[in-house]
Length: 183
Image (cartoon, rainbow, N blue to C red):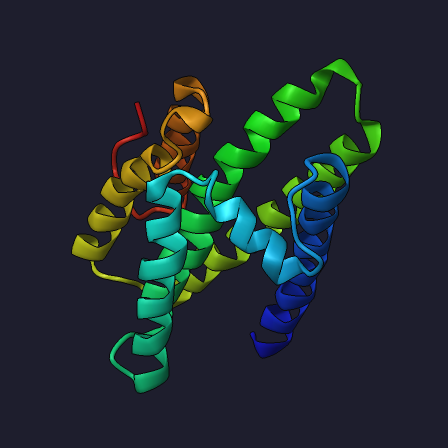
């Protein structure tokens, strides 16, 4: 498991480098460093996205570090909600925007990230299967998927947000966590 997490960390660093290049070279965000460009990008991020990444994720990280939260909670937030819903919705919207072929290198990079995220979510789902969370936790995860998708606001089309939330519910269903299929 530790080896898989280290591979995922490497992937996330590669994703961050690509998006930093896009921010600087294509979007022209100000800043000499990735940190400065990320700070500039915050001004464009929907409040719900900032809340997920700058409040919920750090709070859960602290809880994991102190032992107040366990692997199931971490996987639920990061793998299932952030990667499986938020990143999925954002990448899907980006790929739709890039369908015209104007930026083929960006499209190829986004497609590669999408493939990485699929295995990350699959690994997270496997971790959930191993930890056997309570039905209450699974129900909460399914409900939070809709909130996570909504965090994009109007930045991502409603149909894509809904698809990403339904995909989370579908994953939980096919893994045997829920009896009903996602609508």
